[in-house]
Image 1 (cartoon, rainbow, N blue to C red):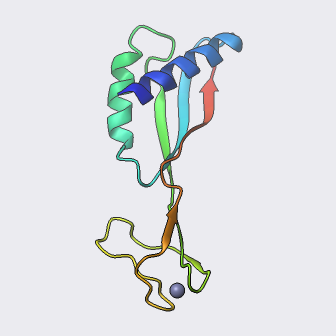
Image 2 (tube, helix red, strand yellow):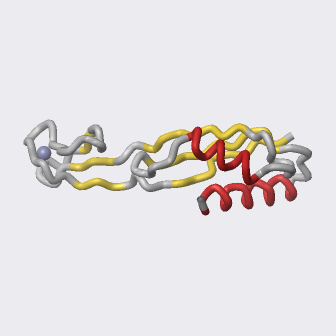
Length: 112
Ligand SMILES: [Zn+2]
């Protein structure tokens, strides 16, 4: 998965710039619409980072919720984005606007 390779590259560069001995933790922010799990990223990261100073680093993943806005009421609300139908709780509009949810950010990197 290219995204994990990109994370590793950024992490190793960061560690080098900071003359770190080891990378111990990586905090990621991932949009809710992305089909990624912490376990999956961790497993692939472990594989990619073997024999590098990032080997054994713990991946921490925070989900960024999707923003849902009703065009009719101009109200923002939250809903289960995996459900078949998303409705505005106020007017019942079933075609609200979704924004965000596909973010992928490195929030912080812990090095020692
Ligand atoms: Zn509405």
